[in-house]
Image (tube, rainbow, N blue to C red):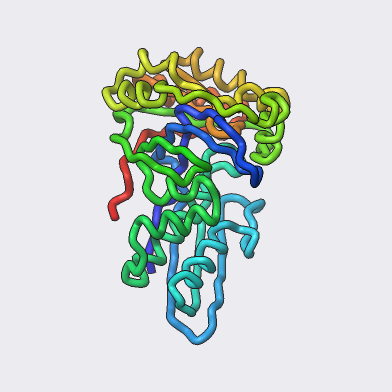
Length: 296
């Protein structure tokens, strides 16, 4: 039996730069994992036939069958390694679902890491990430964690030093946002991205500032293209950002396709006060901090 942390991620920079013929979008993103996490407990026993069982706590809306990405991750790992057996998965859910925090991808990544360890590490980290890419665009990054410049559809990772430790708050309110819908709205706004965007040096400059802990200078470089379309259906985004800034956040921005919002704080007391205030408004809010890469 093994327990794996499935850490949430935020996008410190997120731009959509082009659209492939198959409908997938090429992105440029600076991603960072946070201490906010689900806990995934796994057990594997070799057997003649494969049986996967998944149970969970913390969110009754989460499916516990093949609709869950964690289930499909276990199925895919066994198929890739030619193994059969009984797999028991238990997910203690803490990351809000459909919130732009990659909770489902993080769970799937934890299953891949955990099963690989339980089975004697038959797959290299590179093969594990390639496998993860077949499940979802965020899964390869979630397998590794830390901070990375992410390009392509999410499968191309340039590992970077993590941002300097600091108090952070993540908050979410309202209904989840469909990533498919959000990309569709951006396609409408940008003509299907028929003209690829020029390369930008902003993510590289931003990562250097965050690594040094110069959060004040990095504020103006934080960027999320989805903020152009998501607030129109999730009016909670702007009030969450405003509330964090009012409580002393150095910077605040939506993560992924939302509607979660994160804030970077200079002091733990300010972060805790912001978190308490947001909870009083009915938001799900968490104090957390940036995390390094997983140890492999």
